[in-house]
Length: 382
Ligand code: FES
Ligand SMILES: [Fe+2]
Image (cartoon, helix red, strand yellow):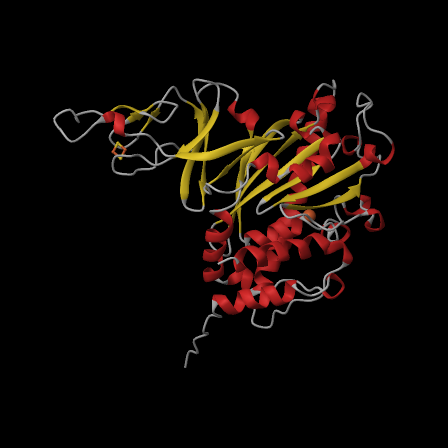
């Protein structure tokens, strides 16, 4: 006879997570397995995180010209972000005001927004400007139609949106991080590639993988592992909006260190990499020569959509060997990502098993502890 497993109530999962996150760091454990597997918990994350926080959609350099646009999904709300005729970056609901079709797909450049269903057309400012065969309807008035705005701000070259009308402005939200990483001048880094992927894991398993470098010597033993010094990693306590840790890169990886033309950085800062987790789902590796990032969106409990991109610092972009640096960086990142994918998909299979049990965290997993506390606090705010 088949035995049905009753799902753990979401209130029990939240209580377990909170109890866990109240432990001292020295006694901290990984998060309970159900936070990765429960559809009800994911629904709470949608409500409490993805519909209420600032979410990154990519680099502002993708929106250089009037009419450049990109689309994204914010917890079930299609959003289009674009550069309007006044050269302002704006975001709108990407849903037609007629019979509610999604309007734009992917990214590109347009002179206006035209619905693919019945061709209602909108300006880049979101005003309805044309609707065929509507003039016999006396109740219809074109000027009543304006696509709802979505809050949108730019920080250090990143475009963020939020569905929350009350959250503090983005630059205020991330001001403590500005103070920590100002010397990298991240806003000047040049993006050279971006891709989208879907992996078979919970979004938090991938985020947590990114926020600790404890796994580098083992999981990445065929690539970056041998260059990683666990004893040189520093994991300070996190802040309300983000966590971070510092690692050093060996001089053998030229683009991991400051370029000779970079004269504003001294001593150990010339080889220090910042690993940043901007809650909930924007992850950045910021070295002196290159950066790469992941923007995560859950697609169910066991699938994550990834926007993956990166590029070089201005000194390396201007170096005659920039193309060479870029192709070796991209091959290295592709290999490292393949290793991470194996790692995080194996964790997903593990947390889904009946005997899975969370163990103690290392001192190198301080960011994971802070992430769990952030999560507990957000999902507890019901
Ligand atoms: S749904 Fe957009 S024009 Fe009809
Ligand atoms: Fe990794």
